[in-house]
Length: 186
Image (cartoon, rainbow, N blue to C red; front, side, top):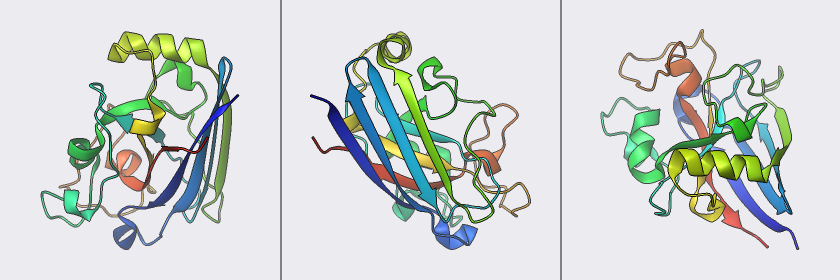
C-alpha cells in the first residue's frame, strides 16, 4: 500500500513581501516511485520559486520557521535563520529532484496571478542512493521534514541584512516565502 505525506503550506515573510502565499504539498511513496505534487497560490507573480524539503541529517524533527527566528531583527526570516529549527536544505523540487542539485534554473515559475502547480514522479532508488551519499542515510524520513517555497522578484527592494546567497543566486531567489510541516497521512 502506498504511503502518503502532506504539508499545508503557509506564508512566511508575507507581511514584508506584500502577498500571503498558501498551498499544499503531497508526497506519495508507491513502490519505487515518489510522486511529489505542490500547488501554490498568492506567490509573487511571474517569479521562479525554488522549493525544497529541509531537515536535520541526524534525524531530529524539523519545524517550520516563524517570525521568532528573525535573530537579526530586520523584519525578515532569511534562509540561514531557518536552520536552527528546520535544518539544512536537502532535496530540491525542480526538474530532477533525484540529482539533488540545488542551484538550478529548473524550478517552477508562477503565473501572472501568483499560481503554480508542480508534479513530478521521482525514481525513489536513485533519490535514496543520492540522499545516502550526501546525508549518510538512505531513508528520506519525510515525516521529520519541512517544505520551503522561496523567491521574490528581482525588482523587490530587500535590505542588505538578508543572507542566503547561493553562488550566482542572491537573496531574491533564496528568501523563504512559505513553509509547512510534512506529516504522514496514511
